[in-house]
Image 1 (cartoon, rainbow, N blue to C red):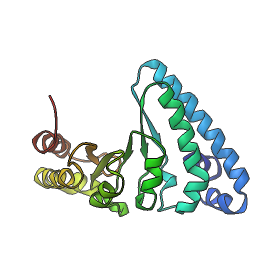
Image 2 (image 1 turned 180 degrees about the vertical axis):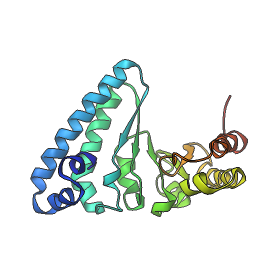
Image 3 (image 1 turned 90 degrees about the vertical axis):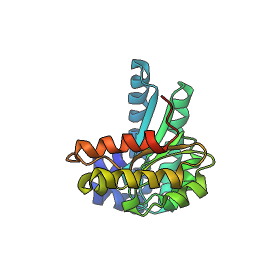
Length: 202
């Protein structure tokens, strides 16, 4: 979806899904192939994990039915290729990913993120629904990182770990990209909380 939106503009991309779905699908397939080729180049340069980022695939923007029809097969295709090269793969769909959590897990990626609380994703619900078969990553409110104090960040990070960190399969992190102006003390507070409350191994 990100590639379609970049090529056609956001509004036209959304219209294409309804008015010209085959055309939209062909553009998305081109974008997927480009992503695969870039990913393989990164793998050959030595990375051990690949990030698939598709913010426009969020249920805040397209319907779960559109996700299943247009995005799901292409995410599966890219993941299968990257796994053949022996790397971990994680999928980023921000905003409201709650309606498509099961489909995200079905792709076969190793982790899904960022579990945006601002988008309406509930960590307890996500853990209950898919946490037994895929690693969850994220969940910490980005506004807390931007505007809160370190003690607020640590408290919320502890709550995230308590909600999603039982057993295995949770990586503490922000509920989306860390806001650029977030105080360094707040970033350090996440690390501190992960070590203090999580299953962090030195």
